[in-house]
Length: 415
Image 1: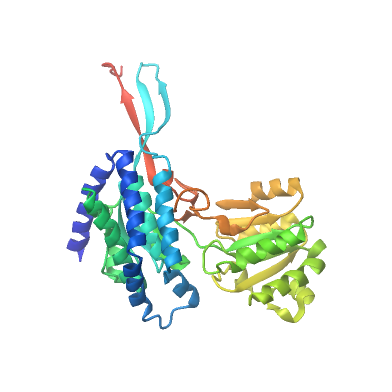
Image 2: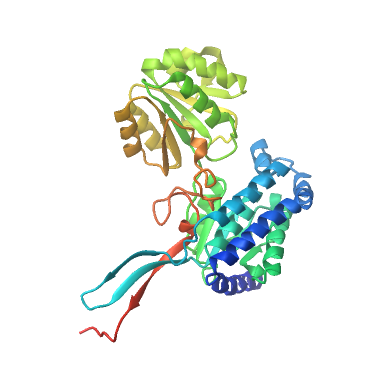
């Protein structure tokens, strides 16, 4: 088992050395070929996906939704790869430069991270998104997905690897760990001799397991207990559209809204309206005492743990608050530092919210569903970082690089 990981790690390191030197044009040509191959081989990919879907006993609907591929979803994945190809290459960019008192010319330049490890669950799109972004940023990637998506992940990676090989590039740039035991996963988390950074994507439980057990440096991508606060000055029709979109457009994902806070000044008018709309979308409503009194039988009392729960389902918890200050305090106490939104016409309230909310993404008058690498113009994303070191929010190409200092001298020595 250890020998297997060591072999994978050595191959990834060798591939990373080559990838870091590739011209941008070569990388973009390869990415375009990968996108074409994904669409061409859609029937084969769907066939592999059906094998994974044959046994979904005990899996929640939200899990099955993430696992399932369709022709439309494969086309969207391919479109993401093409967008990555169209983006500027961050490698070699000079962040800053200066000349020291000793006459040394110092420049800070962007370079690849090296070997990136990804641990994730039943999210086949992560396989391609990670491969495309890491490749463009000059990194090799080692992928360890969940057993539920194993056949799909193997097939997607095979399509990418075949294109790389056909282009004369190292297929070891993208490798899938096909052994899905927890024991091997634990060893992978400690493969710091070969892996430069580890990125977990999935449930809060998975992420915390990686954070607590890894010796490889971890970029933490968090769960999404996302809130929408409807201010007393909000356009209520706008608020309704945004809440319905953020909750129901795709409730199984981390940027879906899980909590709704409503200012008491407009609660009597807005809550019956939004409750009726949520009910039409079969959303279960859990409310605090004030919300339940206004909504009536469409809501049931929320429990204390509701305020900290990421449902990933057709469930929302609603709280009536007295002010924007109470809303901000509640959000900062219970959120996961992911995405938060205020609906308001008051500029001062919008500024207070954006300045005081502690989260990777803070919205004014927009749905939290936009927290996504593709929507941000990154082509795809490696994950949404909720930590504060190195990267925060949707992680694109630049977040998959680091910097080094290049110092040019003319024989200087330090006295």
